[in-house]
Image (cartoon, rainbow, N blue to C red):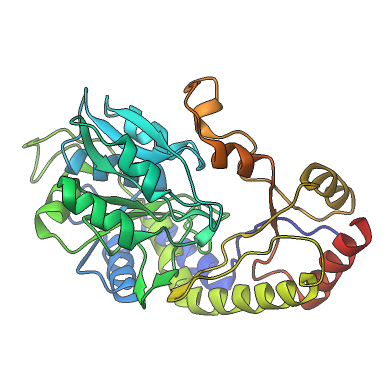
Length: 360
């Protein structure tokens, strides 16, 4: 029995729409507003998360990069981010010439620690990027209070949190811009792709140009941009996936509830939702001092348990730093994510729980 940590859920509808696009030959569009399927997809996202605008791009990393460009982040600036995240958060900052400054996380849900955030702010701080890790919502109230005090804009890294809400409001919609990913492992996919949501028309207009070499019309490049366009095929897949997303999220919730029930009596720290928080259960992440043993034995049984992230960004060869981030270091040696995606059956969940119980 093989149970991967995450796998895309694709069907006949996605195959049909891709085939129809291939027959037309209209694979992409360099117009300011993008092709038909890009525009349809953007409307579906705005409707789902309740944002005024959505701008589709070709990856979650491109979404972060474009958002930073829209804020005019440049060489010499500092951007505060957690180290306990995928490296794309840091790389997007570095690509602008700015310096990523690493902030510790909270044990409760692995997101940015507001107290440590406040300590790291300097005159060079030009943006804050909290990451809604594993679908868990960052402590936005406290982060917002700090950002307002110092007049610092916020970009939400919502790559892993599509469908997560706080006080019934979707992640990505709380501040200037929110960035999402549609990598195949996410809760919905375009194959590759990403998007930025915003309620600010000025940012939306800049983002439309940034994703298309800074062009508004023809060849009138007005600001620095890149080819970050989302192809029509990917946009069409994403549009179909958006229709299925509520069902995907419902199944993840059901699987998470069952797994929590079956693991509740074991000596493990299970994920908990905060008051007013609803997570999308992108990853069901436990912590245990026996992580390495558990990981090895679960994998041997065909269970795709995985540890995100074994090496925090500040300890990678590129960003090697002597900064002290104690909770980040603790998390990297204790976290373990278990499969609960829509293709995981009740029988799979029971097998995972039984296997963990036997190992412990």
